[in-house]
Amino acid sequence: MGANSIYACADATHSILKSDRFKKKMRRRSRRKHRLCCSTITAKFLAKTYTSKRRSLSTQSEQNSNQKKGKKTKKSTKSKKSSLFQILLNTYGETEDPLTRCALAYLLKNKCKISELDEDPEEFTRSRRKKEIEIERLKDQLQSRIPKGRDLTREEWLETLEIVTANVAQNEKEAKAWQASLLRKTANVPFPVAYESNEDMTWLKNDKGRLFVRFNGLGKLTFEIYCDKRHLHYFQRFLEDQEIKRNSKNQHSSSLFTLRSGRLAWFPGEGKGKVWKVNQLYLYCSLDTRMWTTEGIQQVVEEKVTTITKTLTKVKQKADLKDKQQAFITRQQSTLDRINNPFPRPSKPNYQGQPSILVGVSFGLKKPVTVAVVDVVKNEVLAYRSVKQLLGENYNLLNRQRQQQQRLSHERHKAQKQNAPNSFGESELGQYIDRLLADAIIAMPSASFANAKTYQADSIVIPKLRDMREQISSEIQSRAEKKCPGYKEAQQKYAKEYRISIHRWSYGRLIESIKSQAAKVGISTEIGTQPIKGSPQEKAGNLAVFAYQERQAA
Image (cartoon, rainbow, N blue to C red):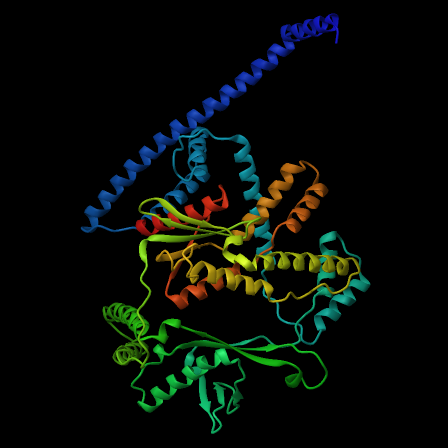
């Protein structure tokens, strides 16, 4: 570029800077920034004024109520926070003053607190859009939560086929509903039967040592137990508990049985023949692992005695008791008398953890699980561990699970294109990985790994599963909208590719595995709210800290 062209560019730039249009534009920008700054400062000032007024009014009302009642009423900090948020939200909907609404909106956005940091408009817009997407998805889920029975006779399928052949869909939504109804592969077996009481099942043994079970409501039908050798001692314990109670003439309480409940379910099989021969009948049993030891039974007895005593005290305070209430008191008193006669069990000391040490488990998109062991009193993180460190030599199973999911997703896509049934079952590899992760988090004895037993953790904090899926789906959608703004097809394509590139994990199954392994050892589990922002390590650490703070506040 020559000197003349440089001078020409300089003159052009100087003329642009001197032009009235450019000056007006810069003035508007400065005014807009000034308004934004002023609005934020104004909102903070109004929020401080409003909170001080609300605090004085609430203190005055509490004093008045205490003077009237003559005694103090205690409320937890958690309920106060929730009630404060609800009060602010209700006031925001009722008030019409713009300044008051501005202050209330500022407080609601910042969790009823006054933040010292300036607000990032882009971050707020992205968070707002993410929450809007989450609300839309929840609305769709609520609409589709209508209970649906199993179409064992295929009548509903035939009715839908007649409608499709005789009518034309009004819109795409109706066409997709018809297609889903026709392609849905319904189960050919009835719903499971739940037995919520442990006395609904009667356990027997024949002369050959084989175990049998009978169910209330099925007459004298007797079912033989077929199980693995590793599960046999469970059923033997169920039989021993009932025999001890029967031989002692009901001097023992069934509330101390190891078995808690059961469920009968049909598993569909393949082949031709009679239904009860082709399909298999499974029995699922739930048990309390504390009932295996004397110390565990003593812990359960103390809990039940406290609960029954409180219940009896409340009922006896009533003046006129009906016959049903009298019968209830008699049953509870009988249980209280018999519960102090425990079943014979081996002795094993209970697990004792340090109350200040918690294990936080965070879930994420690219990294399914991240663990942090935190000393909440010292505010110190003792260890971080990722999925690769937890699985160790079995980390290749995670990639195999991912490849299997991608292959099944591709087969499902091809079946959908051909309007064919697209329900493909997966192997139990994911469940096996979940159990490996749970064992690594809880029971791994090596001191080089972060686990609950090594650090004598008091509890394990698990995120709420209720909004985990929604957070992940909303985050993917917000990423897609930011990547391809205003182009819906490109957003769907990007979201689909992003979902394929990450792990699709069954967090509910993993949580159940962690809870099951923790119950065996004696470590308690807590449910906490996982932070939205931060790295996986920070989320795991903050999850443990927040859970400890909520525990102290309660």
